[in-house]
Every structure is written in C-alpha cells, then in structure tokens.
Length: 452
Image (spheres, rainbow, N blue to C red):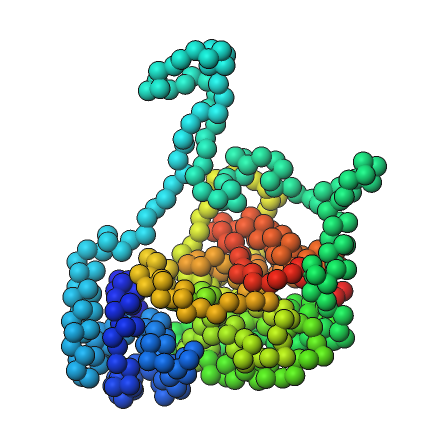
C-alpha cells in the first residue's frame, strides 16, 4: 500500500472504527482475497472481540495487504451496502492523489537561534539594536533532542568514550558502586537467580518463498549463532526455529508463552527477519514470515501479556528485533569522525527492508490511547529507528546483532540492560556510509542485570 492510501485510512480511522459493520464484510474480504481465513479469525479475536476492536484491527491490518488493498476494500464496502463509508474513502483517496504535498512529512532542519558569546560592551549593560546582528563569536543552538545534535555541538561530558573513573579518595560514590548497590536490591533490580534464568526463543527467517518478493537474508545464520551462544552464556535455555511462516511464528510464540515459567526469572525472544513499518497502538513495526505474510511486533509482544502468559507476571520479557523499520536510507549529517573505519573493505551490507515509511499521526489518537492496557516488565529493542532500513553484512551478519553480542560480552557482567543498549546504539550509529541507530521501548519497572 502506498503512502497516500495509508494516509487516507489514518485520516478516516475514527469514522471507520465508529461506523464500520465488520460482520457483513468477512465473506466479501475472503472472496476478494484481501485476507485469508486465519487472518479473519485473528481480527475477530482482537482485544475484547467487540465490533470496535475488530474494526480497528481490520483497518490496521489492511495497510499490510498490498498496493490494491484500499480500492478492493472500498469495493467490499459497496458490496455490503456501506456506501457512505465507501464514498468517504473514495473521495479522500482522490484528494490525496491530486495533492501529494498534503501528506508529505515536514522536513525539519536545525535552526540557529542566538549568539552565545557577548561583547564587552554588552556585559557593561549598553543597549544594542536588536535588529543588528552581533559581531561576537557565534555558536549555533540546535532545536531538538540533545541526542540528535551533531557531536561537535555537544558538551564533552554528554558523550564520554569510557566509563567514569572510580573515585576512591574523594569519598564520593562511583557509577560502578551505584550499579553494584542496585544489583543487590530487589526494589531496584529484577532478581535473576534461577538456574536456568529463563527461556530464549530465536526465530531466524532466511529463505523466503518466491511469491513474497523478499530476498534471501544471507549472513543471518551468523547472527543466529551469535545470539544462541550469547544467551546460553547468560544462563538461558535457547531454542532456535528457522524459516517459519507467519502462522508458524505465532504458533511458536504462543507455545512459549503457555509454558510454565514459575521457576524461571525471565524470558527472551530474538527475531531475525525482513520487516517493515506498520500501524500500531503500542509497539511499531512488523516482521515477515517466509511466506511473505506479516506478524506485527505489537501482536508478538501481546502474546506474553498477563492473560496469555500468567507465569511471567512481574518478570522481565525481552524482545530483540533485527528487521527493517522501513525503506529510508539515513545518510546522516557531517560530524567529526569518531570511528577509525566506517566499514571493512570486503564488507557487503544490504538492508532487511520492504517499502513503507511512517506517515502522519493518526487522527483517532484519543480513541487509541484510551484502549491501551498498561504494559509492564517489557522491553522491545529494535535494530533501527522506525521508517529506516536495518543493515546486514552478507559476510559478518547484521550491524545490530554483531554489536549487541560484542557489548554484552564486554559489559553484561557489570552494567544493566538499558546501559548496554545505549552502548549498542552509540556503536552502531557510527558505522557505514548509510547510518542506522537502534532504539527501544522500555517498560521495565526495574534495572535488569543479566546473570553471568
């Protein structure tokens, strides 16, 4: 589905959720092959199973059903007598096609606001013409989060290259001591004393069916081996499943969630596949099964909620997603070099990408927010920022997994997971000609220190 059609669905979503008669649509959707019977069943089971929940899930899933999904859906509405909604979508679609500028995201750039240094006469309180630019030394001030500033604009203390030294003589508390205190305090950190610590499921999708149009993910086997060895060293029982369809992925995750985790302290899921951005209420993105069908990250995470997996209540549930968030290639901006080499001479990076980029904010945000459960004890780590590609070297594996493994090896014995992921983000962000930065959705209630 192209961006204009996605924009139409999001713009009309409040109306669709409020008025769509989903029960009349199932046969029409099947007849036009917009959805499979299994997909229809999944939509019917969405959340509470109410008409509104089914309608909302249908609109979200529709975005993943190909370039002709919206016109076919409009035809289904007309077939079932829902002409008002069909007319709304058709009119909105025509308007979006005629004015593509209306749906284009804003291109925000850094803005220089004011001089930082003052001339001597300014310090004496002499008045200056506010319209006359200062001739003193100017330093640009960049609008936006500090973590996105160019490195040479940041104070040095904001980007240390190494851990702070331990100050024994001054009597102050070091960062390392603070970590040690948190590690032994059940109010500040999760207790991971069980042996084994928990289950880790790795899903590694490499070979995709021809009809999917997705390329073989050469190099993913290296990622899989790295994660398998790393989580075994972290005292997890590791299970690897390869080349699963979307339905098989869901079945494997449901099977893991239904196990008895009472004697365990944690659970981890690693997914290596192609992916794309997708509409969501909680967690962005979706990953492909080898049959070319999508499973949303949101659905993956919700399989492990309190209802589906009660024995993991109050225990950390970790998800690591190596897949693309979209198709944009980030060329970055010029900063002073912080890495001796951007890429090895014989490297061959390729993206785990399929076309899609996040569009404007949905207009029924209040409806979406009010329906959310409060997630807890969940962390989802993404290999890339939503809307951008995630790079994988065909010979050495993906940037994200290679770096994740290396950082865990060096620092997992003394640092908590959030700190480890900050290290991963920093290390990945300086790689390559095209740029990539991992991120995470963190709903953990405490610090998490792996058992090493």
